[in-house]
Length: 346
Image (cartoon, rainbow, N blue to C red; front, side, top):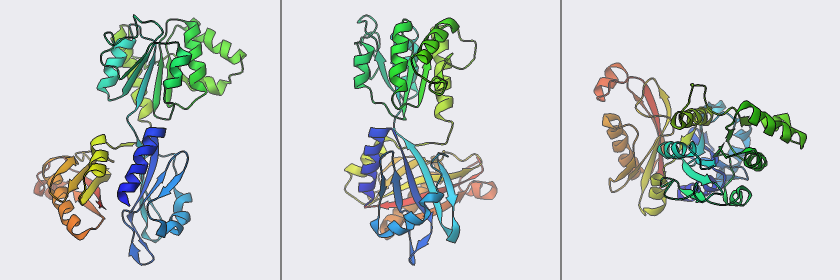
């Protein structure tokens, strides 16, 4: 059942760019432990891993706030849930292939965005100019947008050569799903485009979604500095609420290996724990593993516990104290504590 659940999650992330995973980390239902039981909520649907506990989910789902991002929720009767706001690899779509687009694309790749360049001029939209880009669309913007995946994990930067293309891009983007859109330009240029759009039926609420002037106010002047200010703003917006990522190696490891395994996930961290909430490590029965929960003795403790749980076929929650004497015993000096959810997968 777990593999089927993660296939559904993988497909939802590819389609929508985002999904919510709700996991029981503490709780008994009808006399049995339901630790590790999962529910997937996407834009279109809800998928429950185990149909035998549908009534359980129906009874508690209204208590979950899906606007908070990743967090832990304690309910009555000792039930505890880990709500994980999971996003796929974000898409950065750069409208315009001019001098700012080059450092923007390069830095976007460094920040692990899928990058797309759109420009209708061959000399500005080609592989020699943007060797690092994942996708280059040399065509009219209206045609190019037919090939763009619009969802809540897409970030648009409008840096075209003039008013006409800026307006064309902005109108299309505002009619679709996106997480961020920013438009560069002088005050007069931006004012001209916005006033024109308001005159043609767009609302002030629509315009308020646009980051313009684009970028953080850091006194940027060169193309590279402007790119940094834009990406700084994108990072700020992207991380407004706690998020989780699942690396493609973890997904592939779940789907392609035909053996028993444990997926270990940090669900809570206090103090200066080694890794953040949502970090995952996949451990196999043959003692191979993928990913990390921080390295050192803490990771070894998780690894050994996972091998033990594979034999007993259990999902449990464990807490590791990294402070004072406990920290020294584990070979750590960072202090704090982490809670790790161990999910058995067969």
